Length: 402
Image (cartoon, rainbow, N blue to C red):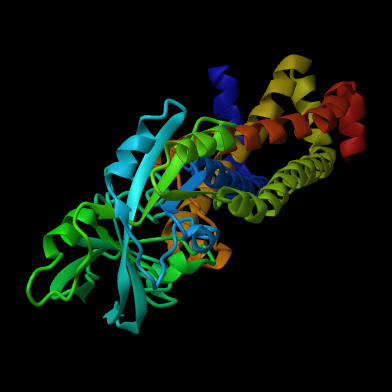
């Protein structure tokens, strides 16, 4: 086996043009396969991460504000409304409630955010209990007391291009206090895109402080976002209404359906591309090897005439195909990964989708699988043209190869 490997490698080096042709075909296949599955994996990872719902199952607001809350999932409002914070504890006491998080609608502030001037609704939330925003952000940075999270448009249309640049640091003055822009949210097409989210601890600290201009009732909240056990939305809604705590309960539509609708065509297209690439690669390699083997019939006949068995000849040619494909596929997968990771912000901006890119371990695993599949396709595709030639008698192969 070792001797056959050495001979196969020498044959590849002896015919550089032929080797480049085989490696190039495998590299292109691996490049497209890696990119296609990378997109699918990123989208599925995003959906898995947001299984807690991008929007809430239920929205609980003060009595009389149910109509205004009908389309509010994680967006702001220019009209603050409040209810006692004790409502949150009452809701959490219901066994069928999995998560409940409160937000405070402060006010709409005219300011400059990331060199973008505008009127931005300000919402205070607690990152420790939040389940609607954290999976919609472009990274997993921890939000400090004086850090803020902004919608994609709050920083300007191009902020997503450089938000993760370590040399770019943005500050926004809110209620007389400077806040650091710690993260940006993916585009949603909703009011969230223009909203600024600040820590509830900072809001409580600045509330009523001289010069801040911020005032809202102490120990009050604006809305409670509720995640229920699967299929229990209507039941929990009735349970909250039975409590008679002066609230309206609205079943939130959530962003999950919207994202599913956006992602489904892209996923289907990616899977179709994967299947088409596999088919085209198989046909291409089979056709290429048919031509190459036809040119090498005399060489193969000579090898057989010198005493090589059919099995050894078969294995030698398959080793050549596998080694050339391995070189090309490895390079193709590496180039695809480099291109995707280097342009991840541009890709997110173009597709307007929550793509959570895999970490380097997952990326390496995808690359290894892609390389293995590409090599396997190449070897299988080379099997039949090699088989038909190796089965010929040595003198017959030499005569047809002349």
